[in-house]
Length: 305
Image (cartoon, rainbow, N blue to C red; front, top):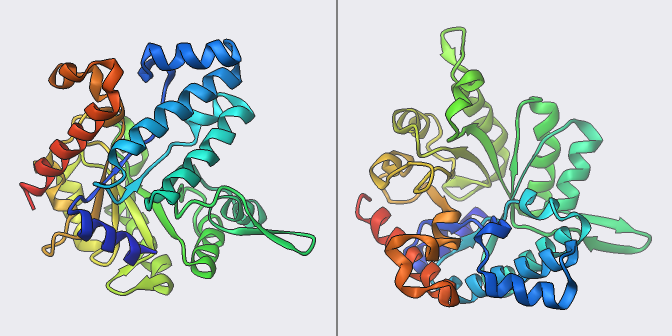
């Protein structure tokens, strides 16, 4: 799976993924109005507006990016109707040739972790049928419960040839409250990095493992350290753009071959039409604004590689 991602990154020359994290406030009024006219101001109406928003953006960017990253919480807030659109979005993106990173940050223990893994990246047996739940290509995983929590995901990852991105050093301001604490003279995020390398050793796919790491762009010195600790681990890098991370900050996430990392941008792309820089497109052409934002982001990142 990681080789598939690398091939698509090389083909598009775009080491990025678009975060499909739609809030109703991001969606142009003409899109929500049409959905509400059909379904009312209901959960179904909200879900329909999200679907139309996602589809328009994907239709404008699918040919210039390798992957997308829908954050499941943005869909869960609208209940079952939202989850239906999450699945519909996953399927549509895959039909367009995109790899899908399911951003669910799941993590529990034993059979519960196994069930999460089955739901998102595996198959479930129902009678004599073998069926797919959400069917994403990658899944983000929270390692706080240790190996008991992560191993079931790794097992499914290996069996199904899927991928994981394990939280190591996140981009949020308070991440250091736990992640930076010293244990035996080393910060906790370094110890997690060691475990990610260990977990990923049985899931190698060429030069890189199918078990990757989430490493935020907002802490460049830490990403430099983590790149050395995890030379064969692919990084999913949040924090670029709206969260303050710059191309210069995230260059340490990459290896010398220009590979090793994929950078996420969510609102900076899907809500680009709201930015002054892309105001000329207007709300009616929000998909075109998103495409231009992708082009600009790719150029910015490639300028430091």
